[in-house]
Length: 162
Image (cartoon, helix red, strand yellow):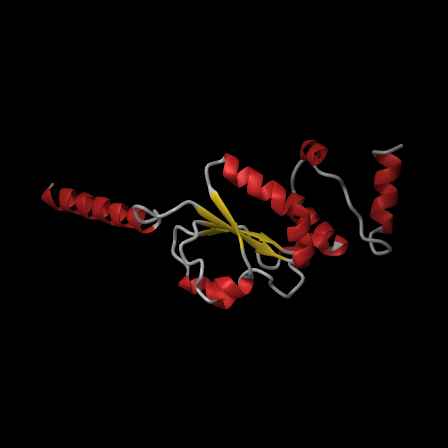
């Protein structure tokens, strides 16, 4: 009825507003800022600059201090070349609320703590695969934390890897 049409129109209006909020303003450039740890920038900047340029973006190398001083608020994307070692060389979590919804950042906080430590990586992988059939195991490698999982490793070695 009439109420349903009104509700649908409200939903469509909300969807249009949401879409506009995640799209950069017209005339907004295609700036990608690249920053991070100095030795990684020295090693990798050239390939990222080439890659983004080939994709018709405007890559700009910068520093965390310049980002915090609002010198690059018009960026579309941020490539963070960092080790995720607890000290950010790109952006602090406290700076995230000032970003626009259309701005993208290649940074996952806590990734190193979860995946770069063998024990935590093994725990994460084992938890993610728990309950799945062996057929899924061909896409990942098994891991065991020793000495606590020694018996599991020996059983697998005797049955699967004989």
